[in-house]
Each structure stands twice: as C-alpha cells, then as structure tokens.
Image 1 (cartoon, rainbow, N blue to C red):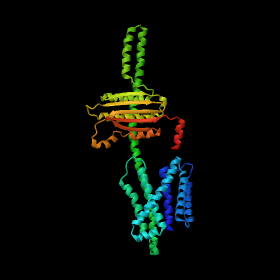
Image 2 (cartoon, rainbow, N blue to C red):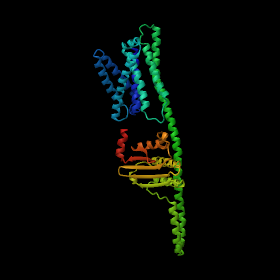
Image 3 (tube, rainbow, N blue to C red):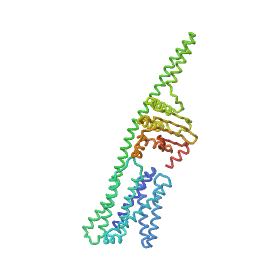
Image 4 (tube, one colour):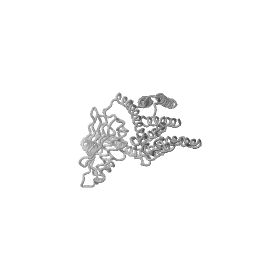
Length: 440
C-alpha cells in the first residue's frame, strides 16, 4: 500500500514538472489552487481505473490505463497556453517515456540476483514505484538535453540527476522482502523510503533553481554587454546629429553672407563662394540617404571607420521603408552588431589579403534582407570548426533573438574566404502578426 501511495505521489509531481517544463507556466485565468486540485483529481481517476480493471485481463487493464492517462494528460495540457499540436505531442511523449521507463525497470530487475528479482516481480507496486523513479529521472535529463541553453552544463549535473533515482531503485530492491522484518525495522524502512521520495523531488527543485540562477547570471552579463554596446551606438548617432546641427548653424552664416553680397551686387563673389560651399557640403554630408535614419547613421559611421583603417567598404541599398517592420531600437542592435563584427574581422586580416566589407540591404513586398560580406583572417585547418563560431561575434545571440521576434532567420556561412551574415525578416502585417503571437 505504501509503495502504491509513493508511486502516485511521484507521478503527480512528474506530470506537473513535465507539463510546466515543455508547455510553460499555467494559464493566468486559472488559480494555483485550482490548478493543483485538477491534477490531484486526474491522479485519483487513474488510481480508480487501475483498481476497477484489477480483476480483468492484464493487457486490457494496461490498455485502458494508457488511454485514460493520455486523455487526462491531454486535458491537463489545456491548463497551459500553447499550440494544440504541442499539447498533444507533450501528452503522448510522456506516455512513451513512461512505457520506456517500464521496459528499463524490467530489464534492470532481470539483471538483479534471482532472490531480489523474484521478490520484486511478485510485488507490482514496487515495480510501479521503480518505474516512476526512472520516468522522473528520464524527463528531467531529457529536458536538460533538449532545452536551449546559454552554456553547456557539466556532466556532474547529469550524474547527480541520475544518482539519487538509481540509489533509490536499489534501495527498493533491497527492501522488497519486508515479510521477515520486525515492526521497528519496517518503520525505519518506510521512513527511509519517504525520505527517498522527497529527496528525489527536492533534487529536481534544487537543481532547477541552480540552473535558473545560472541562466539569470548569463542574462545579466549579456545585458551589461548590450548596455555598453548601446552606449557606443548612442555616441555614433549623437556624433552624426551634432554634425548635422553644425551644418545647419553654419548654413545660416552662409545665407547672411550671400544676402550681403546680393545687396551690394557682388555677384562674382557669390559664384565662387557657392562653389566652395558645395564642395564642403559634399565632403561633410553622408552619401547614404535611404530614408531610414538607423541605416543612414550606422552605414555612414561604419564607412568612415572603414576608410580610416584602409578597409574597402561598398554598399548596395535599395529599400522601401514601408516594408521594414523592425523597430529602430531592434534595427540598431541587428545592424550595429553585424557591422561591428565585420569591421573587427577585417581589422585582423594581414596583408596582402584584402580587407573588404560589402553591405547589401534591400526590401521586397515580402521581406527585408540584410546581407553583409567580409574578408577575415586565415584560420588554421585544425581549428576551423571552432573558430568559425568566433567569427560570429559576441552580439550574435542578440541578433538571433531579435530576428526570431519578427519571425525571421539569421544564417551565416563562408565561401571563397568570404564570411556571409544574412538576416531575413518577412513582411508581416498587423493582423497576421497578432495571429502568430497568439499561437506562440
């Protein structure tokens, strides 16, 4: 009886953990109390079904329990805000993992000494508890393996996850023959099993908290880097703004001088003065004038920096601003990071290899594309697979994140010693965007 109770308690926590990890948090319109009560009610239904089918055929009992568990898990999945396909897949995958756990459990039992194997085989609730332990370990390990992460976890985490369920399994096997125990021994054994149950659950929550803290530290580090980067971008745009203000201020003086020349009818002086003024304006004014201030500022600033460092900088920009759905703030991050990475890569190039950057930005009625090509320093063949990732630059995770936000893609590749970075963002109207956001 106690092993049956332990099995269903562990199954209760397993279902909650699995659905929360793969479907996200519960819906906001459902209270926490109601959420947990629904899970308890579902667990009670499974227990009743299992016992009502007890006198029937074993295969029938298993089939009925499997179908009911799947239906209940699917219903529980609807307590979370996620696409229907994802809910169905999550419910089915948990059933598959449970079946796999049962197979692993029976396999391990078959490898135990004959006495222990026999005592476990004739005690179905011992096997059920062992199966739930294996299921618990498998779903948490699968979560760590599948879940996107900012940095890899040490093998120690995985060993720790598997160690406690494994020890629990063998302790259950060792205590399966309880008929010869004294009441005192039985009491201590049951207390030990209770401690094992809560240790397994606490193990999950402690490791989950540790990993969550690690992820928060990574986010804080990235935010600090992004703050420094945005400060740099602000300085670039501020410089461009001050330059424009200076031109406007100087233009007033020029108009006053021309006005005086007209009053005094010194027309020849005006012609010479205007010729000189036009040359100065052409030298100081950026040749990039796309209608998008972010593109103008960053391309102009990067071109000036490239010229100072003897980097060939070419552009091909054909855009219609109506097809650019990216906010100015997000476009600063995308374009700024890509241009900075290209400049940094070219700075490391050693002559006679050329230093070149080509920027191709264009729009169509269906998409907005940024394609930046640049040369880069030679990479030793033995390190190419590793160093190719470094060519991305440290701001690329932010570029990927923002591109995904607009349902776009970021790709990179090298060809003929040229590094290519491509951001492709589809043009999506507000109605379609709202629909896609709701499906997320």
